[in-house]
Image 1 (cartoon, rainbow, N blue to C red):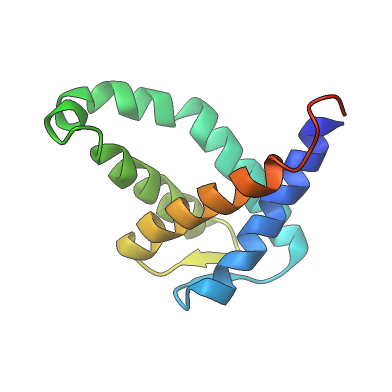
Image 2 (image 1 turned 90 degrees about the horizontal axis):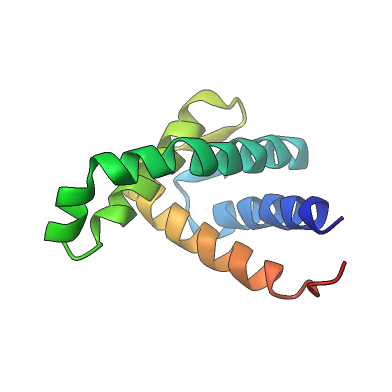
Length: 114
């Protein structure tokens, strides 16, 4: 039940991004649900591999390269989901940061025992 609520809240966080950034577009709530699911899968499956492969760059930049990875993955997901577009790399970086903050804040409102 909690997983379903977090998924819906992440979709709502995606719907909030076009209000903050002109370079991120989400057409419908259904598109936001699909994009939130794909973002979760990409962050679960692909992101750890990229973090491991870019560990020297991450250590050299004191962890700031993680922002680049997150931005690239956010931009990547926006490139192949119809109705969810991210116009560029920097939009992906800032969109990923704001998306993470909004989804963390919304998820913290859900009690642990749901």
